[in-house]
Length: 407
Ligand code: KET
Image: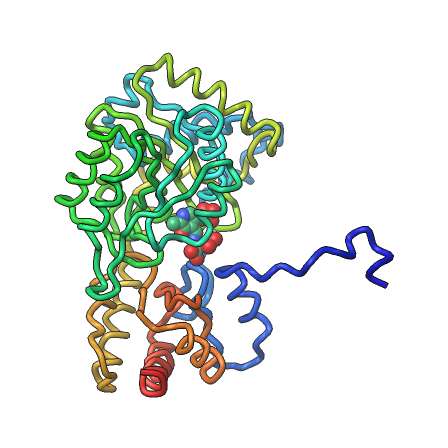
């Protein structure tokens, strides 16, 4: 009997809107099933990919018998932190040289966002964070649980399937001074729409003029353009002006280290002294949460980033992933054109990064899942990285039928 349990009154929670898609997919027995839900890269054969350079790094680590399993410091692997800051801010970054940046290893992008949120809720004077509408579904939950109050700013205009730049400027312009602003460094999830460099510059000016605090989520560095440097430009623009900001980095996508949970939180401060005090407080956030981070994933990243050869090999493999996604965009667009599917589908080739924000509504998505065994989030986002030349026709058929049925 339920009532015998002290947990008898616990109500069943819904599945996660993104990770729950995989749960549903796993239960489907159809041989044609296709998971375009979670943003996870697949090969042309539909298989998960471990990068060659990652395998190489792991071999080196295994063969190095001087390596032990001692605890890392609370802030993680020092070498990894240094190299991560360099990767996002640039090798020549004055902020790094002036020791104004503190970087702590965290549990991938999510953990970095959470630690940053917890730090802000304890030590920053403004507890409101503005996140784009729409945004990655976990953002509001992470920041609310960290103790921040979440508001949204306009970002995407469904009518143009582009950036609502006017709305963005209006909403950030109306934000209380000092508010925190969450920005996707590149490859905005779920829309695939990024500001142009010129628009970034205007956003920067507005943010600085109102003393808003930028918090960058960088989960896709290298996945937007194929270039690690180009994809870091938005962040570097904000650091070049000497102002302060936070950056959450993830190696889940760009190094394919999803389950290793490796990421970093950097806080760029005005002076080295502030940065070191900030770091001392980050340790107080981390220690009671998970004590210190895991060693393996960070060691893989450090091994690759510090070796010129391996770094180069990584950039080539990363570019190949980005290029394959771009090819999938073209193939899906061509397939819909060939079918004469009603509507303008050019956004499929215009959008950037891992996802296409198709514009399909939840009814159409449900139909595609039921009749075609294609799994995606109910907001119509599809992971282009989960698609292959073999599965494009199936997806195009499904979209075509969904538009015909519920157009
Ligand atoms: N930020 C963004 C924008 C993001 O899309 C993700 C993951 C993360 C952070 C966190 O990733 P982590 O694995 O903690 O480094 N997004 C994909 C996976 C997920 O939802 O967990 C997704 O949107 O499918």
